[in-house]
Length: 238
Image (cartoon, rainbow, N blue to C red; front, top):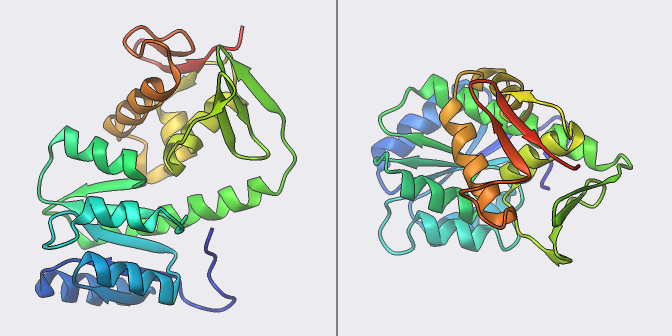
């Protein structure tokens, strides 16, 4: 994980091919206390991220040349900090594709700059909490055919490592730490995304769907990540 240097402002890389959008976001995020770096396309985004090591990347999907999806893939070869997607479309398949490639959050245009700042701050807090937790020794939780090594941050199914995005792992970790307990929608949203996301039930449904697809034998008939109707979810280990 890329951590900011002492006394530096948190760095945010804004990637969008529209110069008006770049200027708007740069002005607002600078006012809110962030150090801003700009890129107009995917290739430049990869270069700027390697040069400045920002705490968060804010990335448009629809760009000429290397689009947002390809940029996520390139960044995730080495960049482990949060990526927030901006998109003009609200299509679920695009959200799922971006999240599956490694994005951590998704905003649909038009949006309020204040909301973007709030989401950037929340992403940084989650990354810092994760860094602190990774230093602690924690057990291995086994459920069905997969196991979660909490200390190593590794998930295995039938002995084979399963690739999860950062946010998918964060959600699975909360469920694993509270195995066999019902976790409410609000508890999960606040634990994984922060208090600003307490009512974003769609986020939770999307990521639970992704976890089941990767971990369950039959995602349509889950046996480990169970739904408690109207309440929340539960990870079953017995």
